Structure formats: C-alpha cells, structure tokens
Length: 361
Image (cartoon, rainbow, N blue to C red; front, side, top):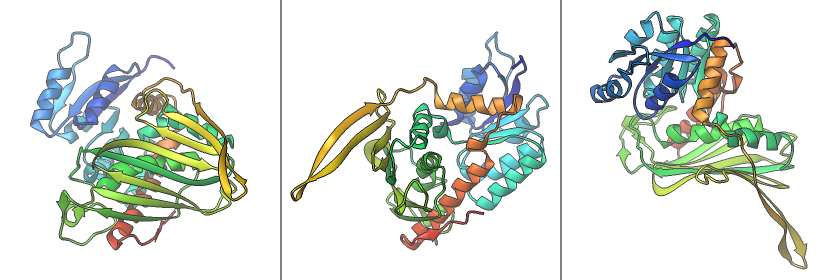
C-alpha cells in the first residue's frame, strides 16, 4: 500500500463531525490538515482538543469552509454539516479537485445528487456518502446470510428506530432516521423499493406551509413517521414484499432494531444488544387438529468480525483514493437512490399516506 497519506479537511465539528476528526487525525493513511466550523463555541472546543500536540503536524482551524477546501495540502474533504448545505459544499470541493466523503443524506434533491455524481466522474474524483451502517459488521454478516439463502423465501421486513432526541431543525424524523434502515434493507435484498407510503405526526415543530418532496421546516418537521417500502417481485420473494419502519425522535423507548422474515427463519439486527447484535431465529408452525403449534425453535447468535463501522467507512474512503478500491456500496449512485426514496416518502407524508411511485432513473 505504500506510505503515502491523504491530506484531509473536515467541514463541521458538531455531533458527527467530531468523530470524523478523530478518525482522520489518527488514521495511518491520512493527515488532518484543516477543520472548518462556523459555530464559534464548537470551533473553540475543537481547537482546544486538537491543537498543540508535539507529535502532530499543525492543523488549520477556520470558520470558513471555503478556506479549508482551498488549501493546497488538502486532497480530500469530509463534510458533516446540515443536509441543506451538502450540495453546495460538495460541489465546491469537487470543483476544487478534492475527493469527498459526505454525511448522509447526499442531498435533499435527487437531481442534485445526480449532478454531483456526474461532477465527480467527470473530474475522476471519489465521492462517497457516509452510510455508516453499510459497513457495520452485523449488516455485512446479515447480507451474507441472506445471499446464502438461509432464510429461504423472504416474506416481509420490519424495523424500529426511536429515541428521545436529538431533535434536528433542518430535517424531519423521516430524513434523519429512515435512511439507515432503507440502506440496510436495500443492501440485504440487493434491490430498491419501487413505491413507498408514509404517515406521521408532529408535536415539537409544527408548521403552517404546504409540504413537499423534501424536509420543509415551515411546513413542520414530523417527530413520528410510519414508513412502508414496497419492493418489486424477485425470485427470493414470490409474494409481494414490504418492509415497515417505525421512526420517532420523541420516544424514550430507545430502539435500533431491524428484522427480515423468511419462510425458514427471521434475521434480526438489534444494535442495542451489544453482546449479540445479529441473531437468526428459527421455527415453524405445525398444524395439529385445528391448532397451530410452534416447532423446531432455535436461536443462533451470529459471530461478527471486530471493527468500528465509521472506521471502516474511513478505511474504504482512503482506499478508494490511494488504491482505487471501488466505493460502489456507498457511492453517489447509492446515495442518490436513497434520496429518491426519501423524496417519494416526503410526498406521501404530505398527502396523508398515499402510495407514491419512486423514479428509479
């Protein structure tokens, strides 16, 4: 692999940006060159935390993203800012000849996502979206189980992603939370939904304007969303396949659980179960007279490889730059596809739950 390292700038030092700073400051294949943060308090905290070590090269701290991106020693940029800023910041970095890792979602508009993907290709630059769960050892192991046919015919999926805050003010619970589970289902099924329906409720940030196909604070930001994904027919699911997800950031029952049900068992990824996050449940119902009786019930905890998911994301991003390793699991195409699903879900949410077809262009 050689000893070459990538000069990195991190844009945004907030809740997620500070983790990216930690990763790129300590990664053997990167050099943290600059950090940009518009919030003066966060910038001061970051300076206190990361400036001054004798064994660390000098880091440029600035309140201006453009200044950090323009530095000649910066070869790649990691962006962890509000979603509404992503398009302009990613475009700026790509036009400056920098590779980009951007926090999900790629954009709030699939047309903008397509433009960024084309811009990256035309400049022969890497553009990766930080869909961290796609690099979680449990999600990787789950994909292998599904591909091996251990669930047999797939029947339906379900998920719950709930907690009490943090409450975002730029996107609703749908755009903040659903993208994780959609990405996992798509990865496990090797498919994308062709239609979606969503219903929700707003308590904390109500609005007075009309809804749209993107988060609109003036129209209110939903705290609760029930989302249903409709997937096209496949040899793996002879019957119609749907996945339903419960999303809420106004619920003290913290849950991070996703299940895929097949005729031979159910695969569950429960992130809150730190000891055994991935479990394969088996069992069937046998008819006796007029009753159905459970039989052959077993529970198997799936062994996982070690590794921090965000660390794996950064590994892949740097390998994409230095070794030209494909980023296809989480590239601009994947990121834009997920934005298309969310845009259709927003239209459904605004309509009260109508099923909306997804443009798969």
